[in-house]
Amino acid sequence: MKKLFCVVLVLITLVSCTSKEPLVVSEGETLYVISVTEQSAYDCEFLSDYMEKLKENGEFEYTESDGMITSVNGLYNKDDFSKCWMLYTSDEENANTGWGTIEYNGNIYGSSLFGADKLKIKPGMLYFWVYK
Image (cartoon, rainbow, N blue to C red; front, side):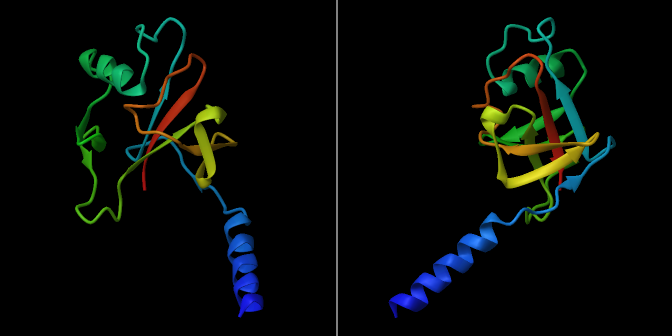
């Protein structure tokens, strides 16, 4: 029984460690890229604060419910969550490629470790909202 358990554990580990092909995205209605510069940071600490400033300036539209982004620029999550907005970032300290990756302009970016309300923004980083 112990041997079977060890074999199953090894197989699960191997499957979870294999790299998956990244989702290749291009600009359009299912992708929104937020680029933070030193000048445009608005003295915001978290991505949600920055998004709110973009919204106030008419540069970005979104809705949220219970901390989850439910729409971006008029495109809403599906009721069954078969398609919804997912957050990725170039900030390697706050990304996990094991949770999923995207390829954008030849670079690979990982899924954000945090939601927009807990993800601290950093000038020079990119934040991607991808509808998938």
